[in-house]
Length: 494
Image (cartoon, rainbow, N blue to C red; front, side):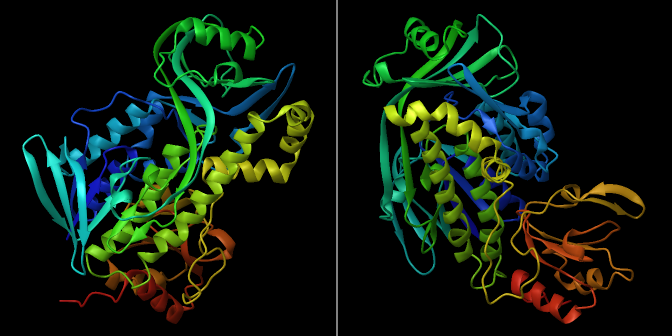
């Protein structure tokens, strides 16, 4: 049982930790010899925090960040706000925290689980056959080969793994040079994401909570500046002054860069024994702060499925479901960020209408809920294979249910882990929990009290927090078939 994860960013670290927790031999290969201090991601959304809670990381990360319960936007003198606090989650906000802090907690987890991270290891060749994958790896000592059952490319937008398996990365590049900087401001801004949208650009100013802000700035008058040209505080302040109508000025700047944003997605997330996740599978505009979050959610979807394959009990369809479920999510995310980006960098006639049209759209309850659900990640559901036993709510994300176990209050997420199914049985006699006992290493069965969704008294939750099946304990024949479909044939009792 062995997997090589290429890339030690948030996606690769999350995935490797899950595999190691499942008992899979996993190694991370990282091209960079040193840890990067580049921190483009600045937001952790509700769904990612839910997944991190299951892994014992969320509370510490929240303590290190700054919670933002609303989105405020300004079109010149007109503005609007979106109330994030109404999300149906324990995390009804956007957590502003530097990517490096998220990576540190994920790295501590993989180190605690004994996962080696090999730095300065560049993948330059890949072949695969029916038994595994062979990588050619270049290090300071020369070239050598590594062999594993599966390889996951989590190595970023310029993924070597994706290139070596020949998967097209389709899409386009936005012809807008964006400035990014971490700044301390002369004046205060609200506890919000703080976008300012002007006729000739935009400025996004989310707070980190320690007096510093992340400035993401597109200035139409500076969009042709070479990517290699350093961003100066004077240039940044000139843009901020124009785009915010003099409301914002940087007093200090500690880090800055320019980059070209892209909208691209891998045509496939799996080729044989090689899979893609995170930025290797999709990249998009930074507006919305969804890049790292989508990668973390890729990892949560893939980890338990790949572990099931490695441990020999996965149903034949399970690994295929990774692409079937996550590719549409990646596509929907790209469409959302592309729509918002096009609106922000729109042509003259559209710019004139924005202050009137956008607030009306945001005020529409259906539109607002849909966008908030996609941005936060809690609005995504999966279409399950037609061959499975169906049930009401199958594929839905499960909220953090309030339960009682042995008379003590608890929550669903406190009962879950990253690699096993969780079966919650609230029936009077606990028949479902008893029926699940033969799958004990794969299914954590819990007798509990509490209300389950859709009037069920049995709920089978996937390790990534989506419903596999829900129903009544009286349908024991259905439950046995469901457990076999999802968790394989029950191990023989010795």
